[in-house]
Length: 118
Length: 112
Image (tube, rainbow over all chains, first blue to last red; front, side):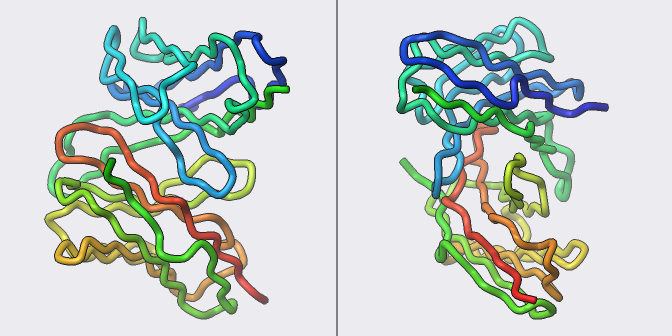
């Protein structure tokens, strides 16, 4: 059981280049999301998906696209990279089903992709 | 928008002492809260959670307290160890969806 797998771990892009950050989970989780983390700040939600074929914007969606063609995969695309997108990106998933009064939602995070745009 | 925030950005603790990390939240509709630990170069790791119908929950060496009256959440770590050095985040989930909102984090440093 691999959990949430993110690739690549590190990436350097030139301004204007495009790329896709990959995220895959093998826990059959309904809900998946992308966050970015900047120094001294918490995680900010970019996009999320409540199931295959359904995506929506989070707090900081500009400059990013997502799709959810399968339950397992939730790629994040940078359309035209900018230095302001230099950050660490985390993918997370949850089963999205209540598990009772004391159950948890099982939010699981990947290990992150460190992106630098020059 | 509404957000979750932590009171202090850093906390220095003597090894063996207890640590208390605080968090204030503003969304009264939040029904679920999580504490995460993030070590350098890694993703957030789940520590403990609590639902809004509870005011206390205990795990191994950790306790989370929830005060809905003042919208305050705290994480207590007993007998703090060097391996507890990390950034700690609180996160809240709104009542109607699964989105998590995070505070800015508290960096805990354990002194030997």
